[in-house]
Amino acid sequence: MESAIYASTPLAGADLPGFELFQTSDIEEARQWGTRVFCENRLSRLDTRKPIRTRMYYRRLRGLGVGRMSYGGEVTIDPGTFDSFVLVQMPLRGRELIETGGETVCSTPRTASVLNAHLPVLIRHENDTEKLVVRIDRDVLERYCIQHLGQALRAPIAFRPAMALDTTAGQRWMRLMTWLHTNLADDDEGLQSPLIAAQTEQMVITMLLTCQAHNYSEALAQEDRSIAPAFVKRIEHYIEEHADEPITILDLAEHAGVSTRSIFTGFRRFRNTSPMLYLKEVRMRRVHEELKRLIPGESTVTAVAFRWGFNHLGHFTTDYKRRFGESPSETLAH
Image (cartoon, rainbow, N blue to C red; front, side):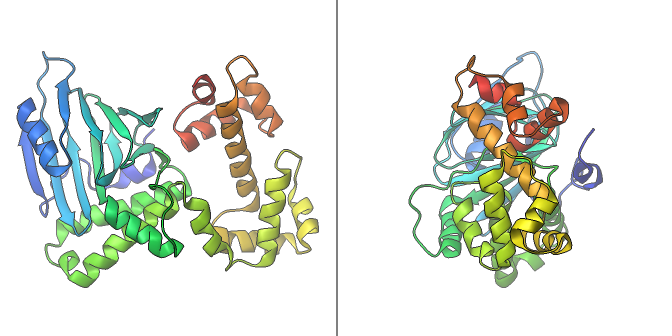
């Protein structure tokens, strides 16, 4: 079943009148359009008996490039490395298999891909796939990140390549994308106002930096944590230290010295989650880290999941795949 975000979006299959439209059935012309909009690339048709029907709507907004596209047929796109931009791709239908940085992302309407500016990329775009895309200039992205951090970057920004779209953060991102595409299509002048365009650029980049995990996420979150009450930070620290132990909401209340109601209110207001969902996220992250460290044969997914408190393997596997874009067995096999 498709995510509700996609079921309600007006973007799939609709014209976007405020966008420039490219369309062709010629593979070389499609490659040239890709070069013009994104970067130099190698485009190959996987089934030469079937024609392609490339269709791309695209529009620039300051440091952003916003669009919707489909190749119609099954193709591979080999752009090498995106040196000057980050690309976020959100399938409306169909599927893409993307290899980047030693990982493989299966991108569907439930899982977007975030392709970094400094890692090689290979995309297999399957038949009848259509996607939204947002291209973000690397220098603009880094400038905003530096402003939020208040210090220089020690290394390039490296996003996790799979973005789960049926999480709270993923749905927040998709609501913004629907708003952005719709308003760019409906309003030829409003978003082009220098002030509004600058604010829109900032909103999109800040949303990506906060919705999708990357190597500066923890540093950026430290600033937000300072606003939260001390008991919220004490509970977070307790969960981090005791995630492998049985923990109840009463345990957290006793440790923090506040009521359970205060805990739920504090986490909802300052973390946009609940304390038990925060615990689940920490445990899920620990499972992921342990599976990546293990050598196949040393242990099993079941043993690791049980050790971190996941007793229903079916639910765990579903949640894990949404969170990391691959099954736990695939992580263990890497």
